Length: 129
Image (cartoon, rainbow, N blue to C red; front, side):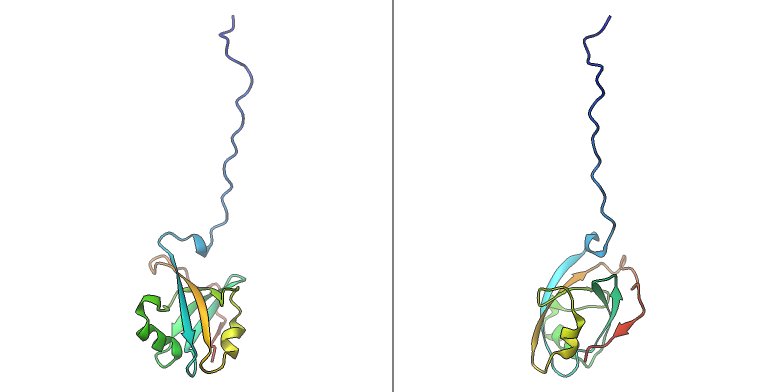
């Protein structure tokens, strides 16, 4: 009567778990590393994004960041970039706030395409001096 086929159920295949979406998995995004030298104020306004990220919400024309952008267009900082690392560590904004004149700071940013960049989660912003 049997066709010789096993009647044992097929093994269950587990679907890969989807991780919750986050800013680091945005299609078309890319990481940028820049070395910033503090000259006066940075001229940067940030908004907290989640527990560990900061989004650039303003770059002032008279700060170190604007000067850096003119000198290094290939490693420029832009509004909506996410600050991922400062000196290769999680972004501790106090490093920028307390940096002395002439100090170099390495930042790693995530450039998210502007067409899909979400607004900041928080309206609390700070201006490192």
